Image 1 (cartoon, rainbow, N blue to C red):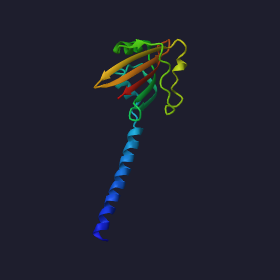
Image 2: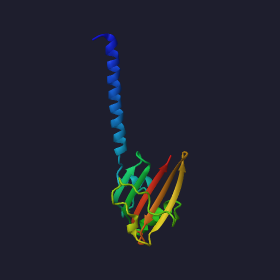
Image 3: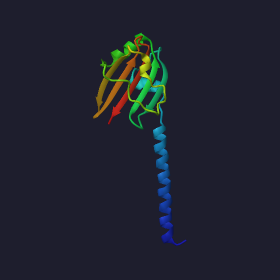
Image 4: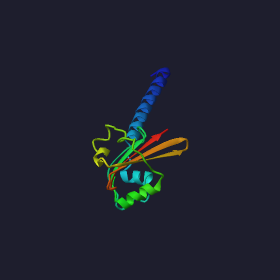
Length: 150
């Protein structure tokens, strides 16, 4: 094979393989899911109280900057969450960002008419993190959402 044909062929093959590698890497990053207990520990409380049972979690930090958690907790341990940050009670927040990729488990409305909604904003390194908690009147079931704004 002449030298002048070999070089473009090698470059084409290398570029093709690089495109495949980058595509697979992006797909892997978009599918990356941290377990619910790690999300809880990182975002809500560390250590995780013994009463906490993670029911559902969805980590879309790589795909859209949103994380959802649904968990059970004792009322005393829920009060630890409230004391851990400057949560403010809000009545104007609705039921969170809907997303079909979560599935049908995201349902803060199921907490009833007497559910409480709490909100806190963190600013860090020029970015913002908005956290919202929906809790039932017994303070033992929680939906949590965090939205990262870059």
